Amino acid sequence: MHHWSRLPLLPTHVKIVEVGPRDGLQAERGEVATTVKIELIDRLSKAGFRNIEVTSFVSPKWVPQMADGAEVMAGITRAPGVLYSALTPNMRGFEAAVDSKIDEVVVFGSASEAFSRKNLNCSIQESLQRFRLISKAAKELNIRLRGSISCCFGCPYQGAVPTGSVADAVRRLADLGCDEIDLADTIGVGTARMVAEVIEQAATAFPLERLSGHFHDTYGQGLANIFAALQVGMSIFHSSVAGLGGCPYAKGASGNVPTEDVVYLLDGLGIQTGIKLDTVASAGDFISSALGKPNGSRAGRALLARVDGSR
Image (cartoon, rainbow, N blue to C red; front, side, top):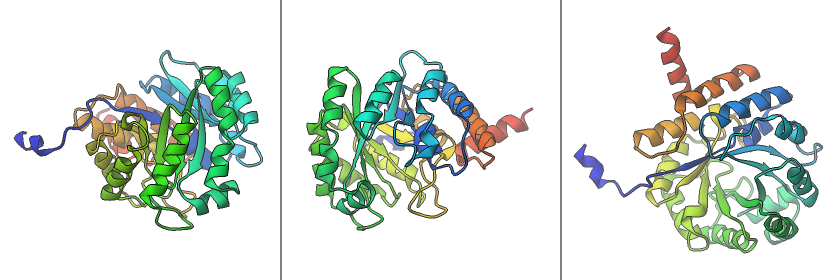
């Protein structure tokens, strides 16, 4: 395998943040039973993830699917060493998250001014200003704070997003004291070269080892973009079991990159994740069956077919 030496040095370890229970299920039209969510999270906890995004503490008026956040948190069996995270858009949500003994809270802004105004009804600066109280309270309570930036590679309203805007948003979240910052491709339009450029620019404003990539597979570029990000040294990625979660801005388009596919890629590169692929594949099978929808992970489907075929 001498030709591998031509590849740039890739990270030896990667952390995968599993976002299926929150980002994935949030997009489901029908109600998902609390017991199903709890079982999914418990299965994922056994798979070896170090970080699982479990719910949002937001007004049920806006996100009815996440109204049972407190029940979910109370019902799961916590695995030692796993960070359980929740989105908290305001102080009320933050307080509810603290009551449920959350390990990490997530605040979110945008790299696109148009997206911020449409979705949060305020400018980027105003949106991040709202999180000052949360960041202060999180620091006082020693709770990890993660910042997420949507539309880092393109916006459904303004189109292209300048890399400088991404770096600015990163800088503002860094000033809030975020422990980790996600660069999200909300509509999945990013390509490998663009991804490398945006990450390198963002890394001028925040340590690369604490930046993470949240890629969507809308145009089928999710894995290619992760590989491009690995080549510039990124080592934290978000993914969703069974590819749960559609893209809300592209009708019928796939959303999150499937965890099984990402782990299969990383395993093949000899990069350590600590994640048991078979356990994730069976969690993907469980949730796909529970939702009555096809499994969105190709690697997951292939692994499950192999197991079925050998019975």
